[in-house]
Image 1: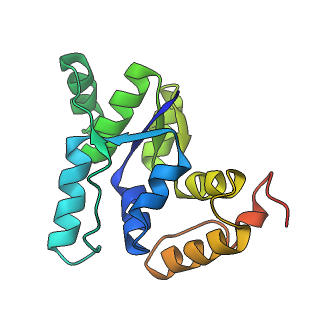
Image 2: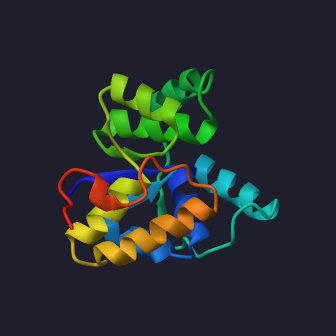
Length: 161
């Protein structure tokens, strides 16, 4: 089983379409970190994202070594992205982020990287959503501010209509 550590960009996209539980079905074991939970709570408090139930999403604590790596990464990345990457790299987990800089750093450090589109693709591949349903969620996410490089998941490899 591969763990997937989720950052706030992905949580926010699923929250904006009020589908937090859908994310739980996209991967075997999604988890997050306290810094991401704090970022999400700030977004809710500021009225930027809706308050949805993430009680199912386990919060994993970093070791002292992981925290030291996160502090170093936090010099150039946000705290949530930095802690997610430090955790993923240390434990061999995948990191889910839509932040371009975070994706670049995570890949340079050897982490497997995916994001909102990967989660939606997994839901289609797992036959949890049809391509049409996934594209509807994608459109709703885009209307809430998600800057997707595609308009339809059919534009990505492996998902022909």
